[in-house]
Length: 111
Length: 114
Image 1 (spheres, rainbow over the protein chains, first blue to last red):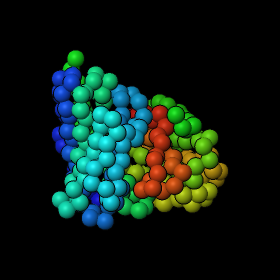
Image 2 (cartoon, one colour):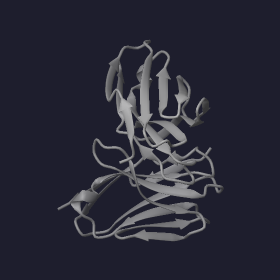
Image 3 (cartoon, each protein chain N blue to C red):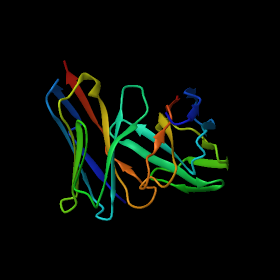
Image 4 (cartoon, rainbow over the protein chains, first blue to last red):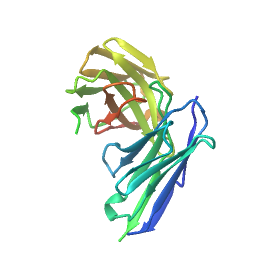
């Protein structure tokens, strides 16, 4: 089955700096790549997703890039704010319900 | 927030006892999922349902069973709980398959098996 690896496991940045989280996947047939944010004690919530027919997608301060050839995708957060502090999960799936998640990245934004 | 309610929110049980977790939705979504969340593993799919009485196994289904007798309810049962099943369990729903539409998660159930 699909295997998703996520790096780094922890990331600390100063407020206003950028943060980048990277994921790799193993199944070249995967075509959907969502990113979820989970604040402490809360439920995971979708923040952005990308499909395999698109190389980049942006929504205000967050963006995701996808390199199908190298089988990796990344989350970019610019102008980070303390409220961006959370655990971020990447995921990959094919056209089915077997969505595999990465292990998560704990992002801390220091004021 | 999507209308998803998990119960109980916290449970402590003894090894070998049966445990049932409930997920209730008010969105009339076709698909429902059970995930477990453990440090270093992210979220792993246990079972999912694509309609009433239609269920299928996920990545880590051993030791778990599910039932869906109504659109709004999806039950997860641990027939004989073990310490390795101590985890946070999340229910999720989606209107279509997760590769096509957003999955909405419940608040989670923290289960401790002692």
